[in-house]
Length: 83
Image 1: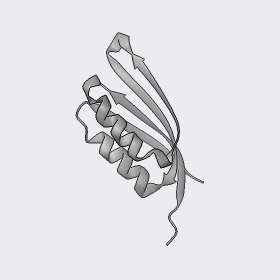
Image 2: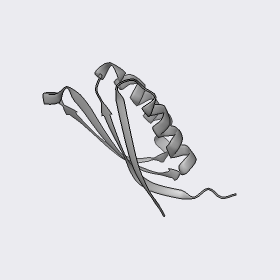
Image 3: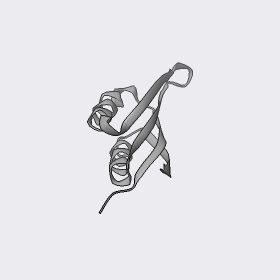
Image 4: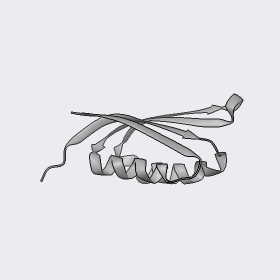
């Protein structure tokens, strides 16, 4: 069975900068589906915000967001479209 490819965006908010290495390790492991990444330190709110453009199958993107979402004080939201 051919898996349906999706293009989408993932928003990540890190409320505890000590979690950043864990987030980066996961992002590195899923680098093959990440087309682009922008990270902004929001110092006034003591947060870091990362936006990703992804292109992959739903299982892989779901695994990526699931692993990120399981990290304490890290919030993740995604929006995908069929291509």
